[in-house]
Every structure is written in structure tokens, then in C-alpha cells.
Length: 110
Image (spheres, rainbow, N blue to C red):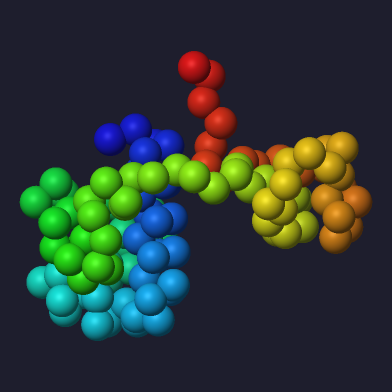
């Protein structure tokens, strides 16, 4: 799994879980894994193995394909830690005015 795909998967697991009002512990139990495993998936400490994907999708009431959808605009992160949804603001953070330095998901050199 590429770093970008892993980031998308982690983001979607957390986003879908939160949109359904589920907590990590309930999801972990439903998927048959420990709390720290689920948390690690969301925080991109590690990626779920392929055989876990159907259980994740079942718990989140979505399809496995939904876990890999990248339909959100890239976010950028300023040195101050502020995530900004729209990278088209002239390269400056609207919160502190500094230059943004990180992209989420990461930009690739394709």
C-alpha cells in the first residue's frame, strides 16, 4: 500500500466512524481487533491487513471501496499547526499568516 493510499484509508476510517457517531472501542470490538489496533489504523501508525477490510466496512456500514475514496480536497498544514481545507489562499495561513508546509494527503510526484 502506498503512503498516499494508507493516508486516505486512515482518514476515511476515522471520518466515517465519526460521521456515524461511533466510538473507537465499539468499532474495534465489532471488527474483532483491539482498541489500540483500531486507533493505530485511524492515526496511520499502521494499515489494516486485507482480511480486516470487510470487517471494518461492516462495522462502519459502508463498502470496502468507500474506505479508499479520495473525494476531499487536499488540506495544507501551516507551521502553526492549523489545517486549511483550501490550498488556494496565496500560500499563507489565514490564522497566522505564515507559509504552509505540509499537505494531507501528501502530494505525489506522479
